[in-house]
Length: 65
View 1 (tube, rainbow, N blue to C red):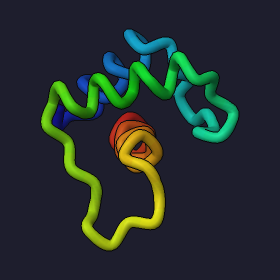
View 2 (cartoon, rainbow, N blue to C red):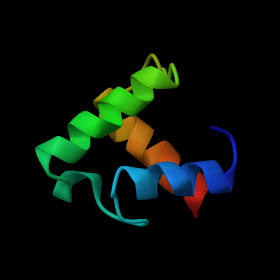
View 3 (tube, helix red, strand yellow):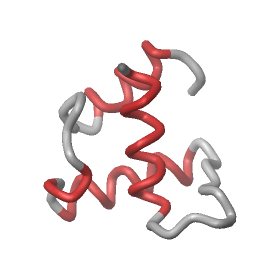
View 4 (tube, rainbow, N blue to C red):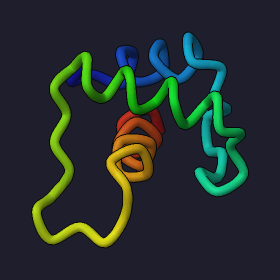
């Protein structure tokens, strides 16, 4: 997933609003984000102070915008 359209398609498929706040997501959406992150072999930064789901959500939101 490298393109804007890929990121938008992923957010749409997971039913996560574009521009939405990660902290407002329900648990099932966070679980779906984690599954997708693992599927695409996403790795959060080593010095990250947050969950893999949050960093993946931020990546999708940045690329989709």
